[in-house]
Amino acid sequence: MNTASISADAAASGRRFWSRFALAGPVTFLCAALVMCGGALWLPKGTAQIDNLVMPIVLFPAIWAALFFYAYLDRSLARAWAVIGGLSLLHAAVIGIYVMQTMQAAKAAGAGS
Image (cartoon, rainbow, N blue to C red; front, side):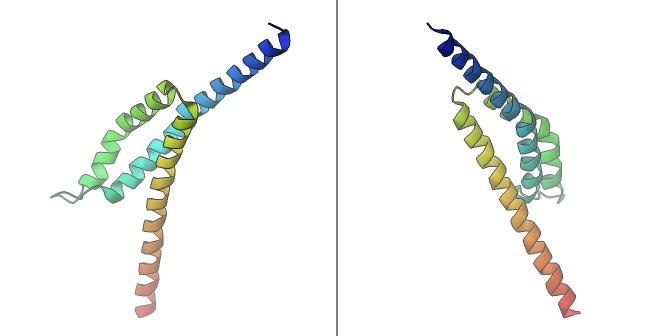
């Protein structure tokens, strides 16, 4: 083997390491936070009307752990980025739609009074 192919393999291995490190670390934490915030919107309220607020907070460590282990153990790094990115975008969209609807409702209530 020549030294150029060895150094290219080492560089690619380093990029994969840092990409997986970023995905399993801060990206997964942000995704878990988005899932927790979005979960308050799509979980049922329950009889006490607080289940949708309490459950995501209680389950946050489990959500983060599941995403962390998935990001770290998946053989395909591109698939792990796609799954976690898609989950983040989905929950960001749910939160954005809720905020927009709330702002429109507040604007309509303010215009009516």
